[in-house]
Image (cartoon, rainbow, N blue to C red; front, side, top):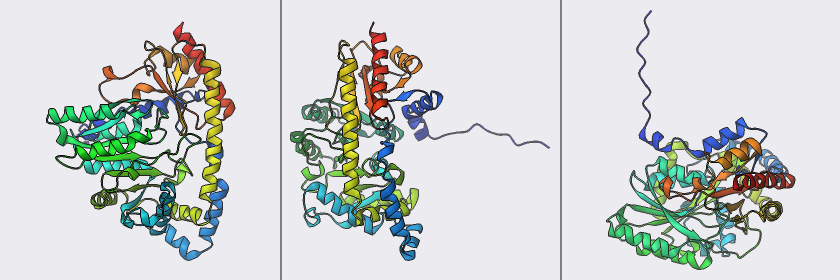
Length: 429
């Protein structure tokens, strides 16, 4: 019996663009080195996960067979009407206004599978191969991978202690206009609160200016601002900052993305987007092709969490737990790194990360001596900072590290920082 010829597998161009992502290598390192203390994982604190609150919400949901059946049935592409109402009320509280003052239609709020799906959908409906997206340098490396998978040209904008520099953004717009490329710019991406990876928030006085620039340079078509507010509710001290969305009185320039993964539970995978009217149908059309609607069960469960008043007290507990972890990492940085020449770090007001910079000559990448010493000898892992920069490898800053205090307990944070300082000291000798 002869077998038919089997040809080679032909994968798509989009797979090629999306392949070789750093997240896969980091996960493989964690699996291959289970004894390694991870300061790399961006996971949430396991002890802060809402077991009691989720059980209470589940039992209340299950007590009503009609409601339970609705939860177990298909939902809608835009998401549960009940939860959208609750989320809209919650968003209004964050904005410090009544819902009626937001100037939103109900359909402009779309529920997604975490905010990552919303970010991906926005890229899919706005970006064709070769289109331009402007991002901070550094920024969230997983979304850089998403944009690469769409064939986008990602242009980094310089940052400082106040986040994305408005002068650098304006100069980039002017340069692209002069080159005839302004028409290819689709949006500016900004992690507006306690950015992953740097922990820096965009300064209050820059927020309105960023939105203004996007509007002023929308000469050939509308250039959006994509606001990633994933860490908005993880604030421990420092100023309360307005959203970029609130700096857009037209309600048509800013796309707002938020998630309940960080503030409640990543296992529920519930996020939301607030969209300009013209983007509602395109996002829902694309989303409908992918999932017919995100998890209806998770949405009904989270509705019960809000209705029973369980959400806000849990956020307060999460903030308290992470404040202690942030303080522990900063104290350990002072304890173990203070004597190492040329080492500095950001002291964030919120979020999950501390951003550390080493002497310019000390590389931190996967192929660097430091990474090998850290993982193999000191058994500690971090995220190399160069992953968080867009553009050619040769133009990226290579001497930085993202350190996460999310998943480790307080002793683990201290021990991880001690090991990492040992590794840095060995390489600096």
